[in-house]
Length: 224
Image (cartoon, rainbow, N blue to C red):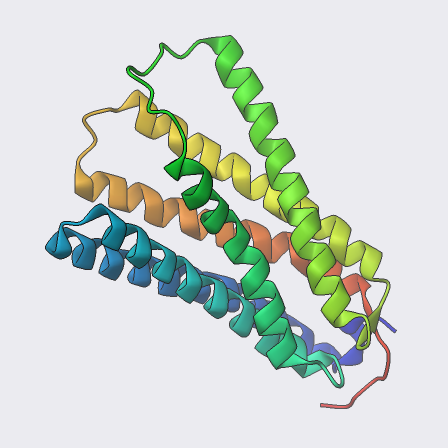
C-alpha cells in the first residue's frame, strides 16, 4: 500500500499541501538566514567572517529543509527516525557549500570574465543538469538509507530525487544567465530574482518528490 493510500482519502490533498509548504518554508528560512549572514558580514568587513556566516546560513537552511520535510514524512511512515533523518540529510546538503569553500580557497582568480558564447551556454547547461541529477541521486540515496526501515520501493524515491534536483539546477542556471546579462543589476532586483528562484525551486522539488512519496510503501500501515 503506497503512502497515498496509507492516509484517509480526504487527507491526501492536505498532506500534499503540507509537503509543498514544508519546501517553501525551508527556503524562506534559508533566505532569512542568508540575509542575516550578509548583514553581519558587511558589518564585520572580514572575508573569513563572511565565509563563516555564509556557511552558518547554509546550515540553517539544511536543517530546516530536512526537519520540515521529515515532519511531514513522520505523519505517514511508522517508526520514521526523524532525528537520524535530520542529521543525515542536513550533513549531505552541507557537502556542496563546504566543497565550494574548500575548492574556492585554492582556486586561481580569473583576470577577466570571458565573453559568453552559445557553445559555452550549451555546455554549461548540460553540465549543470548533470551535476544536479548526480547531486539529487546522492541526496535521494542518503534519504533512502534512512527510510529503508520505514518504507519500501525506495528506488522511486532515489529516481525522483534526481529528477527534482536536476530540474532545480536548471532554475539556478537560468537565474545565473539573467544576472550575467544584467551586470548593473541593483541589489533589490537581485534579491527579488533570488526570491523568485527559490520559490520556483521549492515548488519544483516538492512537486517532483511528491510523485515519489505517492509511490513508496510504508512497511506498516498506521491509521491517522
